[in-house]
Length: 377
Image (cartoon, rainbow, N blue to C red; front, side, top):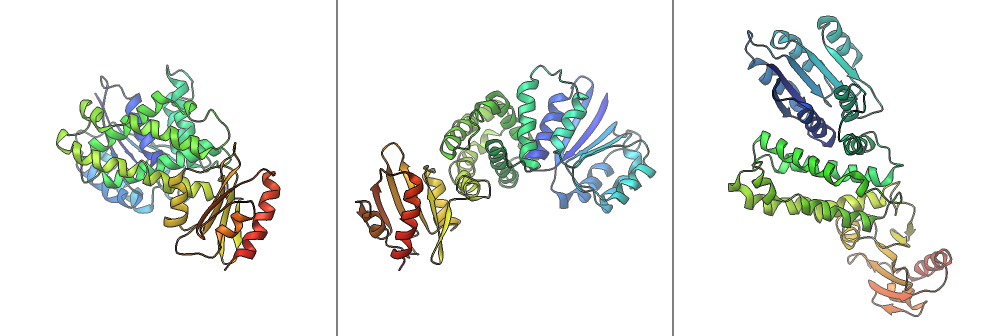
């Protein structure tokens, strides 16, 4: 029986590589073991793994994905060259040319797949399928690959797919950190494989049917997904020890909805390609978001009270009724919002007010900026 040890990174790209290798492995002909480490852990981990392999029973294959080899990592590989018969490196980082030259020269049998401008997941998928679209579930599989690729190489012009990838990457990184003390390394890998399988079942197409980035729609669909990944089902699958089910039930909701997603979506909403990016205006010493579509309440709270990206917002909260909301940071009452809202027949408090408008949004924005400048304290 062939024996393979696969080492990958701990982000979405790295764990998706782990998922694909596991998915394509054939237990009847392959004994597969896997591990996931961060970049600064690789040297020590390689030493630990390879030193434990008997010299008279070397690995058939050592596969490394999404981990940028440094000089000391190559030195470990060369020191234990008798512990594996074949080495495959699939990566997309700026690996030092002299280290690659060392591997090619001293390990002529190694296989190197290094290509910048694409993700390790996509390179691995091409390697596993030999570039042929013959998988029975290729459609959803390639959607998953495209999700990772879009985020990992920063194709920000594909807004919904990029933002979804950004969010999943943040979630995977946090899971890798927060679940590590609670479950075994293999338990964590099984859990994340389970999540990715759920993701394939749900399919990316369900989430990216609308090419326009709509934060509210995006947020609601994520709720549907995360609700589907519950700890009860994980215990039934035997992926998680029932003894820690309650602890996970308490922990996972704090990592997915709503805190982590609200922060992530807030970052995305105000990023250079986010829906709010071009709608932030300087008002006195602060920044004001003036937007003609509602953002989820959690995102607005993160923008103002956690991230402090904006000091005030003016938002068309009910477009069909022309309802506009005015808010500002409680600790930064620079603008009298009640005065501004009163210009359109509304009113309220210094920090929170509202009104209704009937004029076109473009002309309203010009006027509201003038009135907010006047109302700056």
